Image (cartoon, rainbow, N blue to C red):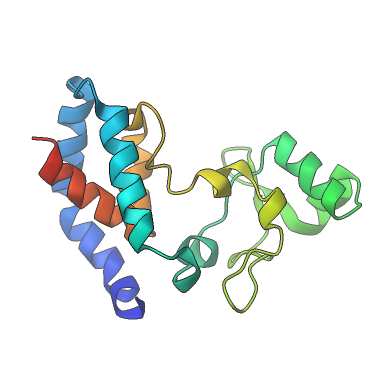
Length: 163
């Protein structure tokens, strides 16, 4: 896994133009069963992929925190939402709440999330490859293939499956 993770940014960069063209076609005319195809590819990939051996998403990027996330996680820590914000978050250039630093503060040394049961929605849904109307998030997916080996593999399988 470590070797693949080291190669992943370059692999994603090499495939970027190909993937961009593929997603552009997909946006114009997605198959009628697109959601079903993506669900299948997602499930097949995550039968083979153990996120605990990787956690690259937690090590290299931070999720957006919605107000609901902040409320839920603050309650978990028995903090007021503003205390949680002050202690862990900052506002980014898009005016969103994000972690003050990466790797994620809540990732332990064995790649477990210390707030797994109350983790942000963005973490629950990452890498978003089983999302309905998947073709609408192609820009996000283009970024995620450079971070997540599973997302990379799913996109490669998509290109074989959807002609």
